[in-house]
Every structure is written in C-alpha cells, then in structure tokens.
Length: 298
Image 1 (cartoon, helix red, strand yellow):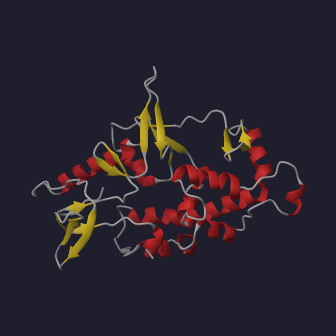
Image 2 (cartoon, helix red, strand yellow):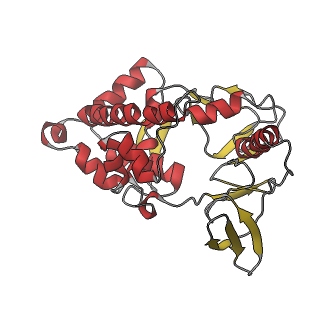
Image 3 (cartoon, one colour):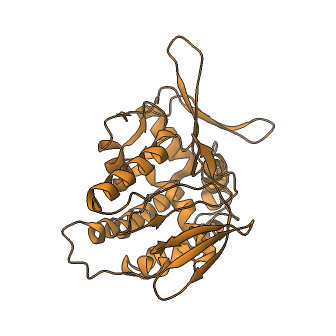
C-alpha cells in the first residue's frame, strides 16, 4: 500500500488474484472444514524472515499471528510419471547429507550465489531506514539494482536458465559425478520444481533475479500467518489507510481501491489522471506506481 500526501493509487497486473474485493498478488488460502479448521496455503505458502517489509507489516497488525510452517516429514519431486527423487527425512541430519551427496558441488555454488544476492539486497533496507538522510533517491528498478552492486543488476537482465549458466550449474551430472550412483541435477530437479510450484513457470521463462529469490529461504528462518497468508495484502491496505489518516488529518480521506483495468495514464505538470478500458476517469493522483515484469523495466 503506497500513501502520498494527497492521493495515492496502487494496482496489480492481470496475474493477480481477488481476495475480499482487493486486488492482490499470487496468494490464496483455503480453510478446511475439519475439526482444527486447518488453513491450506494455495500460493505464497511461506515468508522468508529476511523479507523485512513483510515481517514488519505482520508484526504491526495485532490481527495477524506469525507461526512456523508445518515442516515434518520430507518432500518428493514428481516428473509426471514417477518420483525423480524422494527425501522422506529431509529435515534430519541424514536427509541433509543425502541432499549434499546428490547435488554435490552445484548445491554449494547455488548457496554462494544466494549469499552474494542477500549481501546486495540487504542494502535496500539500509536505504529505506527511517533514519536515512534521503540522499538515496532512485528513479527506476535498474538504479536500485545498480546501487546494490553488480550481482543483482546482472541477474535481473537474464533468464534464470542463463543465470544458472553463469553460476556454473550443469543440466546433468558430468565428469566423475556421472559415474557415481544416485547423483542428480539441482537445476533440473529442485530448482525447476520450486519455480513451477511458486510461479507456474519453468527456468527459461523466469527472470534470473526472481528465480534466485525462490532459493533464498534456505539461508534463513521461515514463517507463515496463522490466519492465512492471503490476509497480508488486506492488512497492507488497512495499514496504508491508517498511515494516511494519521499523516493527513486535515485532508479529506480519499484513499480508495478500484477494481478496474487501467488503460491510460495522462500526466500534466501537477497530476496524473488514470482512465479505465471502458473510458471512465478513475481520478487524478500525485503518484502512480506501475507494477510490471522485470524484463519490461529495463
């Protein structure tokens, strides 16, 4: 939720979902009619604790409860006909050793890439710190990545497949690994499966930076919201309205959420006017933020 001094607008692309009348990202929860009223996450099932903005949002809402996700047992990777690999004890020391043996040096290469990405990404929170002098005013996504070092910028310009080539992950076990039993491809198995589950896209269609984000949680704690992660977008709107109301008490309360497809943005020196695809004016705003895939933000 974005607030401005006078008016604000926020929106999501057609890939978003509707939740309680709000346009949101690919996040949805289903509450089962069992005795425990179990909440099943259908998208965005976990949150990485290093995502400080989301964590802060959950912490600031008394109606949301952060809990550890259910993590007993293991997981398997299904290729359409059979399980490529099954880790029945992936959360134990033995399961960890089995994974290290199967993916070998590729796992260490990927973990190293994640470390480099996190080092750069953490600088964003430094720039957003409330005690910052405001000197870091960035005009585009590219400037954000550049300010955080070359690694994030490079990964944002290529597909995830191309990024894995740069990192040095092979598509299939080669060399000595090709002769060892129970060797697998981290690229073809785990990384492909994770992005299909998270984004419904294979590695060739994923942006390099977005694909890398899927693997970041292996370096930190995870949590989810007891009430369902789909409550988070609604909380963002609620907290944004509250922040606007506190900051602009002498102004009319005019934040609103409109379920319309924006077809045009017309700007003059003072305001920007939004028009819907059915030629309806949606109002004039001080700030308009357009969300688009990274490939279209170059």
